[in-house]
Amino acid sequence: MDESAAGGAVAVDRGIPFAEARGPVATKDRILDAAEALFMEHGFEATSLRSITTTAGVNLAAVNYHFGSKEELFQAVLTRRLDPMNQQRVALLTELERRAAPAPVACEKILSAMFIPALNLARDPARGGENFLRLLGRAYADPAPFIRQFLSEQYAVMISRFKTAFGRALPELPKKELSWRLHFIMGALSYTLAGTDALKLIAELTPSETADDEMLLRRLAPFLLAGLTSPLPDSTEVSRALDGDLKRVR
Amino acid sequence: MDESAAGGAVAVDRGIPFAEARGPVATKDRILDAAEALFMEHGFEATSLRSITTTAGVNLAAVNYHFGSKEELFQAVLTRRLDPMNQQRVALLTELERRAAPAPVACEKILSAMFIPALNLARDPARGGENFLRLLGRAYADPAPFIRQFLSEQYAVMISRFKTAFGRALPELPKKELSWRLHFIMGALSYTLAGTDALKLIAELTPSETADDEMLLRRLAPFLLAGLTSPLPDSTEVSRALDGDLKRVR
DNA sequence: TTAGGATTCAAACGAACGTTTAAACGAGGC
DNA sequence: GCCTCGTTTAAACGTTCGTTTGAATCCTAA
Image (cartoon, rainbow over all chains, first blue to last red; front, side, top):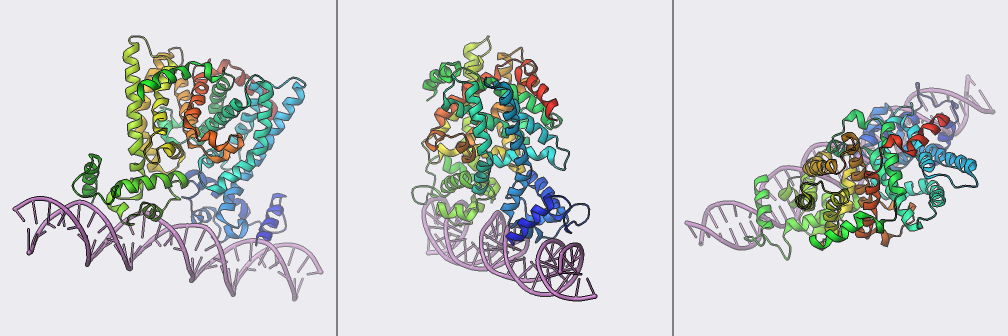
């Protein structure tokens, strides 16, 4: 069953194959679209296969037939958009490095290579594309082991490349500090993209404002660039403020 | 049933009440401790009441008897630690404002008033306290409506106070921009505290490093301060880099 | 046209879930 | 002593879940 499913996937991806189109959209794509929307809205655990197949207008057993399991379906939903995005990120960075060589690429350029593919994804006219980033942001924080492992593998190559690039752009910054700042950047990015309504309301931002991914990333990028290029933490004011006030509170 | 549960809670919180202690720890607290640990590890949906009551060593029906429902139990788990933390944040800020008056409190001081109570929570010797921040970070990204609404209400007062303080410290910054930056700060903070293993590994940080909440917040605070106090986004390099490169990629 | 593999379908499976029930328990007050 | 009431207990409730089954259906290739 796994064999047939994998074979079907290859055939579908290559365009109109032999005969598995049912109506305007093939079953597999209908499932992916419905799953993407529902996973995004309710999360992985709270989304049932029955709601997915009902929304997609396909039989309940179709998911297990085409994808094997609910977990594999979730990974397929992520892969469909994540894989091209990360490939585009690496391609952009490679092009930037080629142009700047032998000098290192500037920090703001490297950051833009991370953000532009995310922007393109946010503007994908394909159904659900404009909200996919929310699903991605939520997946980052999901405790399910299979999701965490999947994301680790998906991002490993890209993060490694960007870390090297940032290291060249910021030679004076210790490697460990760079690791932390990259961690913070990925955190702020994914959290912001997840766009939970809870804290949106707290920040007194209207839904129409938070729904505009492009404006969101345009504001986030300078914010993160400032943090990334800031002086070492031990010599800044907050650390001293923490030191002074902690003694008083403890 | 709700009445009796509420009455029991008050009695327990006041110390050793009439006669509801069963062993060293009362039933309600045993449930809260077990629920906190399991919710933290598996999330809300993936944690069953049976696993909680088994871990706590109490009867399955005890949760519905004492808390009413699984959702109310989750809120009780959060409230137990979140309420004191946010109250401490507001108290710290109030004290800072009293000392600085009539001048505005400096940004780094305001930030420290947000971070110090989180640090104290991370170091709480009470069982599970050191890992509670992870649960909190995950709750931020949870799509369940009752969680989002609960967090909104819990944070509304505190965020409003801090937003006003930041507004005084950064008078030249437009209100809208400040809202966004606060949103980014809350995002980076909660995401970092959630501490998903997936991206930890990506950042090549060892588990022992990421488990140290104090060091984590000490590195995060300067990072966020730099972003908070950075120049307006439209005049920075990233925005221009985005403008230039976007045309090429699109 | 026919054989055969891929796909769809209705139905059911067993397990796990949150919640409810009614009886049993245990300590204090009259 | 018995009655009361908060609490605990074992058992079962009804529902929903992901997955499996086996026959029906469709399309292509021979």
